[in-house]
Length: 169
Image (tube, rainbow, N blue to C red; front, side, top):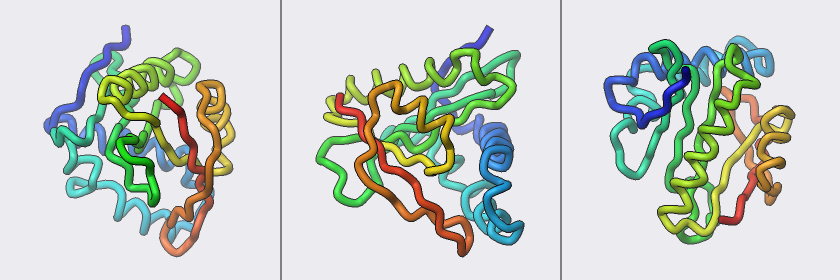
C-alpha cells in the first residue's frame, strides 16, 4: 500500500537519489552527456535545493512511499517565475517512479498540492513543464491547467523550452 506524508530533512539522501534517477530516465536522452552532467551537478547532491529546502515551511515536499521507499514526490514553493501574480504558488516538481505510473500516485500527489495551495489562499497554482514531455502536459491539461507562456530552461549550455501553466484556484 502506498503511503503519503510530508518530507523531513532525514529523507534528503533517498529523495535526492530517487529524483536524480527519474530525471535521468525522463530527460537524460534530451541533452549531450556534458550538458546532462552539468545539470545534475547543479540540481542534485547533498547541497542541492531539493535537499537543502526540506523542512523549510515555505517549500513543502510531500512524498509517496511504497514498501518503505520513496517512489514519488511533489514540491510546492513560492513562485520564482517572473511576473507571478501576488499570492500564487508554484508546483516546482512532481516526480513518480516509472514503476508506479498508472497507479494513481501522481493524482494523489497533485490532489495534495492543489488542496494545500487552496488552503493557503493562493489564487492560482503555476508550474513549468518541458514542451516535449507530452505525458505530463496531458496530465496537467486534464486537471485544468492552461498554457500561459514559455520559459527558457537551461540544461548545461543547452536551452530547452518549458511551458508555463496556470490553474485558477
